[in-house]
Every structure is written in C-alpha cells, then in structure tokens.
Length: 250
Ligand code: SAM
Figure 1 (cartoon, protein in one colour):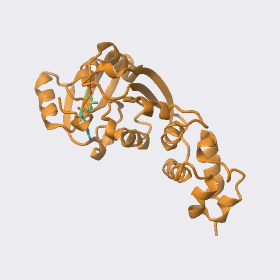
Figure 2 (figure 1 turned 90 degrees about the vertical axis):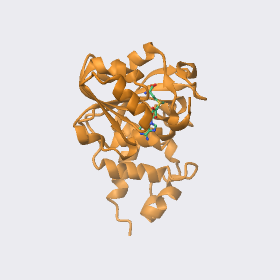
Figure 3 (figure 1 turned 135 degrees about the vertical axis):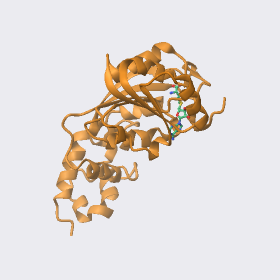
C-alpha cells in the first residue's frame, strides 16, 4: 500500500463509530469529510446525515468511492486538494476526517478561519498534535497552534488511538479531537491570530524581541515584555493585543 498522501487507513469499527457520533450526534444535516480514502469513516457518517461531501485528492481512491457508493444519493465525492477547496461553498456543516498528517496544521487553520455556520470539527491527528492543541501554558507542547485553536474553540480529547488501528500502521500513535467553536469569539479574529503568530515568532525569544519589529518601543514598555509567549494564558493574548493595537507606536 503506497504511503503517499498520508494514506493510513483506520480499520477499527469501534473508533470509527466513536468519531461519527462525536461529529454528528444522532444527526447532523450536512457533513464534510476530509480525506475519505476507502470510505471507512464515510460509511459511519452516512446514516447520521442528509448530505455528505467528501474531499479526496487521490483520483484512484475517489473513483473507487464513487462506484462503491454509487447507489447512495446523500454522498457527493469531490476530487480536490482540501487546502485549495472552499469548504463554505456547500453551506454550513460539521467537519470530520482522519486527516492526512503531512497537512494537519493547515487543515486545522482552515477550519478555524471558517465562521459560526461550522460549529464543530472532529479530527484524527497525530498524537503529538492532539497534545499541542490541548496543551496548558508553560508546557513544551504549548505554542501557536494551541493558542490559535483555543482562542476559537473548546477542545475535547476524545481518545488516544494506537498506530496498530491503521493499515499500514503510521510511525506514531494518534488522537481523536473534537473542536467546538465558541459562541463568543474574540473581535478581529484574523488580526488576533496574526498577532499570536508574531508573539511565537521565535519560540525561545521574549515577547519584547518578537514584538519589537512590529510595535517598536511600545513592546519594551509592556509589563510582560520579559516573558516568552509560551508563558501566557489564552486570555492574556487578547489583552496584550488590545493594549498594543491601541497604543501609539511612533
Ligand atoms: N478516512 C480514511 C480512513 O480513515 O481510513 C483515510 C484517511 S488517510 C489518513 C488520509 C486521506 O486523505 C487519504 O485518503 C489521502 O489520499 C487523502 N488526502 C491526502 N492529501 C489530501 C489533500 N491535500 N486533500 C484531500 N485529501 C487528501
């Protein structure tokens, strides 16, 4: 089995069913699945929705899916790169997927950039990423992806999934995570996420050194200037962003 495109197929029904329930509950009107592969998760999502859009880059797998589910009117197979696909084109939806691990972070960022019509995502990701998304301040795993995700979503770790649950097994264990979009989102979300990126520009540098190129002397005057971004709790990024954005940096 070729390992290109992160093709590790999940073969444990109990885990697949758990993912489908976490994504849809009893029923979700519309679902988008990223990277359906041979349709293992697809099969568990279909009974729980009226409309399932799957986005698969591999033409051979997509063709197999189309013929396997030819009699299923609820399923629409899109042969495309998920990173170049406008996921909002079919309307609001729940998003699910056993993600291709080489593009996990950009897919999560694509979900974060969507709006309230996309209330939740259930993703299977490499365990190290599950830990990063769910990390606490001051820990090694706490970084840009943690803060970006937790600013926008409440994170729930559904379960750890061993490498042996896949064919072929990947080199690392995986984690199933549920990201639930918060009702109250920070104002200026896009700018705030860009600011968080600047704070973590060089992870070992202080906030003063990371922010000086953008805010000049104003960053030196911050009480937090000697701290590193990994020491700040989520809310403090919002507070810091607001203070710096409305300060005269001339
Ligand atoms: N969902 C299946 C399962 O659980 O067995 C397959 C998951 S496999 C980890 C990832 C899938 O994503 C593969 O089918 C792969 O071809 C597909 N894929 C890889 N890169 C992609 C991309 N850029 N856009 C869409 N699908 C992609």
